[in-house]
Length: 281
Length: 307
Image 1 (cartoon, rainbow over the protein chains, first blue to last red):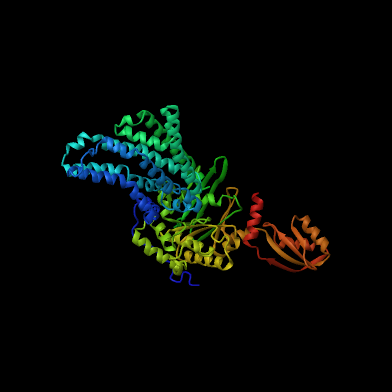
Image 2 (tube, rainbow over the protein chains, first blue to last red):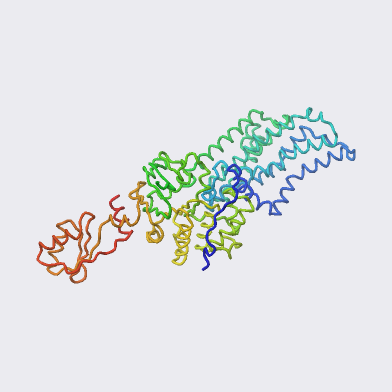
């Protein structure tokens, strides 16, 4: 048996700094998705409405099309808060999010990862960023690209000042809403060692919660019923952040409180479930 | 000049809520292979997790190569290799992919991590299987893969948590050979196991833990000497009276084949006391043979006393 026939060799090369150590984990996390054609097709579908609006803006500028609204806060709010967007966010949460921590728990690789020079916070950041990165591709990033596109083709730099709310509103929506959703999915994934169970839980919460919220809201004419559905609340938040207040009856403060509570609960759950003693016991 | 300890643990305590897993653990590792022994629940795995900074101690501290662990933080794990007891493999990844990925997580640049992974997989004898899915590896191969993962970043000390558990004799011997080779290469090994023969085969020193406390931390040879001594006595005379006299002296004696008696003398008694006692009896000792005491004898007796 030719074991250790070459002898042990020491490593004399460079080492990357500690703060960089989450990057390989993040890369490893997203690689299987980027190698999946089905996933890439799904991402293309998620980006499709944004691409269509971008094309229509170009056609509008060159007067090829008429009756197309200029990309403003209302258009941005519509693109961020519509059933297509909700469906894509839910689907992505389930597809990517259900296995984030659960898979490592199932394969018992958490101990291996945290046995390297990686802090639990870095580990969670790598996991969260792998989901958030995909979300950004059809939330914040296309909004800002649309703004740049508009300024680029019109040369109207006053657009930045006139529609500054698009920039900060979409940023606020992303940080508070999308960030809250990512933390929620991460916390749920850390509860179980079965990605399938986590996926089922997410299906229940994201799809049926939204349906229940819409139904109760319509039946009881109660705006607070939206709190059943995270996706519904995301839409509410998007509309408020971008100033399209008439889209929903629920107030801005309600949305902010909702996501503050969701974020705090998710962080608490992560801390409880991910505290080093408990995780590796 | 005193040689600096590779690992120096002082009054280390750790708990899981109300359960105290480590209670004032103190020992030093000067280098080479050190066995970490103890029954189930003794605190061996907890000690390794605390030493890896995966679990914070409730009190106490340890120094690694003279540096305080509290100052080293996460960076300490760049200098430690860890072979966990549990599987810890991801499905659908090749051996080379897994080792290079974990090399990157230990700070090696991507290209160097791949080169190093090739080197280390050759070293542990998985060179020919490096492109195979790790799920198709046998238990022995998975164990060697864990060694490769632990060594890819070239650590100073390697913690092995039950590395030979569940392996066949040939695979076990390969792992032990690997450990010997590593010690020869100047690495320090902390070898936690239940299998005392493995410890005797590669370690020069042992740390025995029981109920979260250190019962002994010294060279194996010292332990064997300090423990009870086992003799075979051929008694010419009435055996019953000899057995009774031994029992009267507080020594453990049991009859063996024909005129033989198996005798266990405590550390404070020796051949002189035995012959003095024999002189007072109606008979004589024809043959006195000392049985070699094993680490197992020392370990079991120590655990029994500890309990």
